[in-house]
Length: 368
Length: 95
Image (tube, rainbow over all chains, first blue to last red; front, side, top):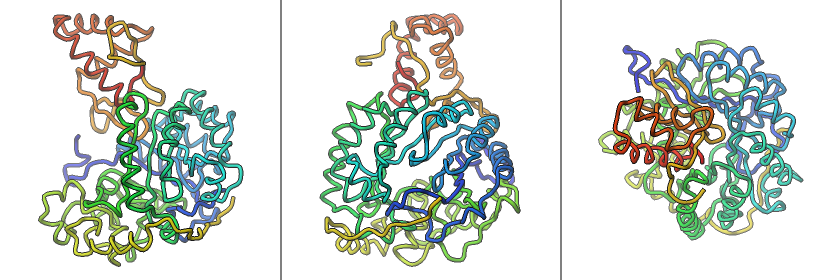
C-alpha cells in the first residue's frame, strides 16, 4: 500500500463511518452511542454530506458505512448512497431494518447500495423485544432481510450477543443461513456509551463464553464458502487487547450526525479531546493533522509496557476508550492486556457483573 | 455447492462484491461487505477471465489465461483453481 503523502507518512483511511443521525426507533440497552446524543436540529444537511463523501473518496476511503442511530430515518439516504457510489465508494447500510420496506430497498439498490447489515437482538422474537424495547421488530427484520437478498444485495446478520442470547449462537448461525446471508457478525456487546450503564445486566459468564466459543468453532468448517463469520471475542475475558479500529488514526474515521470527525465511534467519551468538524476543516487535513487523530496515532504516545512490547504494531495498545472506562485514563495500556498493571480489574468486574442474574435493563430513548 | 471446485463449474462475483480500481493506492481490488482483497496483476486477470460475460466455465477461463499469458495450460490450471477456490472460501466469488 502506498503512502498518501511523503511528508506525513500517514496512510489513507480505508473506511468512513457516516453517522447520519442519532435518531432511532429502538431503545437498545446495549447502545454504544454516547450518553449525550445530537438532536435532529444539529444534523448535517444533504449538501454537507455530499461534500464529505467527495472528500472521503479523494482521501482514499474505499468503503462508506451509513450508520446512526437509524440511518433510514433520513429521507435523503437514497441521494447520499447515489452520491457515494458516484464518487467510487462502496456503500454499506448498517440498520435495524424496522423502518425499511421492499420498495425503499429497491430504490437504495438502484442508487448503488451493495450491502445491508441488519442487527438482530435475538432469534426469539419476545426476547429480542426485551433487549430493543421495540414491539414487533423481529418479523419486520426477517421480512426486510429476505427482501435484501431478493434484491440482489449482500446481507449481513449482525448477532449482538450478551448474557440473554449467548446460548443461542447456533440459532443465530442457522438464521443467517436460512436468510441466505453471506456474512454473520457475532458481536459480543462492547461496554461503551449507554451499554456501560447496563453492563451488570448484559455481561455473560465465563462459562457461557466458553460454550459459545466451542459452538462457533465447531460450526466454522461447514460454513466455509457459504457464510463468512466475523467473530468478535469479548474483551473482558481476553488476555491480549484487540487492535481497536485497526489502530487509532490508521484505517477509520467516523463523522457524527453534527459533523465532528472522530478516530473511533466512542472517542467523545475521552476527556480533553477536541474534535474538528467537517464544516470547518477539510477531511484530508483533519485526517493528517488534527489533534484528535494525532493524540494516539502510532506508538509515540505509548506508556510501558506497550512502548517496548513486540506487539505494539499489532494491537496498537488496544482500545483507548476501554482504558478510560476501566482505569480512568485513556493514556493507559488497555487493561485487557495481561501485561497491564490494571489487568486485575477485569477479574473483579467479570466476577461482579458477569452472571445470569436478572438485573433490570436501562432503556435509552431518542425517538424519531 | 459442495465438493472441490472443478473446471466444469462456473463462478461469479458474490452478491455485494465489486471489482474496483483504487486510483489512490494504484491497484485493483475486490470489495465486499467489510472486506477488501488486493489483487496483483495475475489475480486480476484470473478474476476477469473467470467472471467474463457471457459466463464461461472455469476450464474455459483457464484456456483463455493460458493463451493470454502464453503459458502451458497444464501448468496454470491447478494454480487458477486454487486462487478461485480461495476467493470462494473468502466470500468474494460464488459458484
